[in-house]
Length: 275
Ligand code: MF3
Ligand code: CO
Ligand code: CO
Image 1 (cartoon, rainbow, N blue to C red):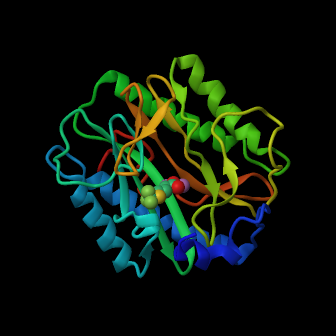
Image 2: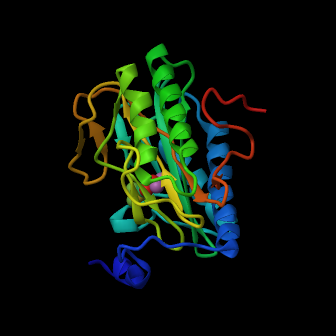
Image 3: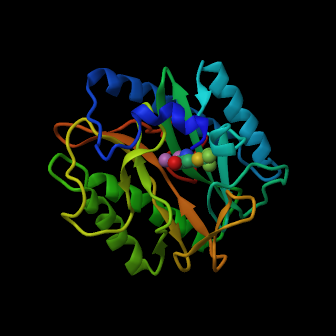
């Protein structure tokens, strides 16, 4: 166990899902809104010729300016403030100095820590005009995330979320990645419960008001299989098909769900109409 994990150990996975109160909701709202504001700013930066390293700099500067920290910087040896997953990269892509090109699609995933609360969210970005199949993949992935979130209410089960996503994605001849999942979040980055993006209704833990977690499905145009490159981070589709992901962070409420990471500018999914 690294010292990072050891430091978190008292707060971490003991098999129990934490239940939070109103003050925690307020902390998560603020953290979620900072992550969402940073994702909005990325929408205004992304265009052909921009590098993912420039995106990383923007994220770092906005994080520091807000009095927050990056949760990913130095996390298990990761060295950036954002994950930038391009085209066939499924997740955990690392920023670099290669310019984005017209037709690329890229997921930017930001996790910040504000006043001890984690804010984790990601969106897809289109670089200029993109192919129709890439547009469809992004549409389906966004819709899949929102259908998964719509299944959340007290008394529902974690399996209902995965079932809603899988039942929507697979008939469109796209696939849901199995190797990465959503996660509980709060004062630690990755906590109970795991949110698997496939499943069966009624299975898994029951949802209770005060639970915090992410829904972050990864959808591939081809097969669901993933491999991690020798850098130890970059996960790509084995068949090199395009992959997309969206991520919201939310809390279960008495009546349903509160999404903490909604876009202040309404930049929900591309094409973002920049004001
Ligand atoms: N933000 C990712 C998530 O949704 C985790 C990134 S970990 C990193 O859980 F180290 F790669 F940044
Ligand atoms: Co996450
Ligand atoms: Co994330």
